[in-house]
Length: 203
Ligand code: GRF
Image (cartoon, rainbow, N blue to C red; front, side):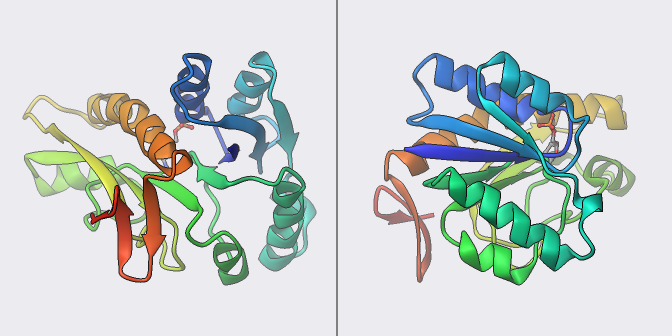
């Protein structure tokens, strides 16, 4: 199975997927990495791993629709079975979401449905929650609102800062994203009309 990964930045989650692939633990092959930012460090990670790295700067397009149209073309040229959003910081058009519905995953740094949107660690700290974490979900038209596949929780301690919390959560991101991708690529994880199932059991 073929995977296309979309990024905007550092690409540490991309690296976790590349590492899993190198250990034969991804269940498929990352055939392209696409970034809407030409200077994203993740593009270098892709090249270093011998993966095609494509910069598609959104600023070169007049509208969100035009950019998403171009992005669809580049993605489809690689004929992916799965599209993986790994720190891809763009709001997607309905057309884009529909095109890849049921075969596009995202990772979001909160225990969804809590803290959709940005600055999740700061908001969790400000609320004084004792538990925070990360979610992998199928992408739907609602931003960070698609059906959740797997989550990992971390304890929040009084000593935690935004930075320390982000580090804790990211270490869990790097553990669970390759697992979720593998489930999908092995055909164990699917999104049906009733929601996601793993090995036929509703999640
Ligand atoms: C991660 O925190 C992820 O949860 C969020 O964007 C960040 C991407 O980090 N969606 P990286 O580029 O994978 O290092």
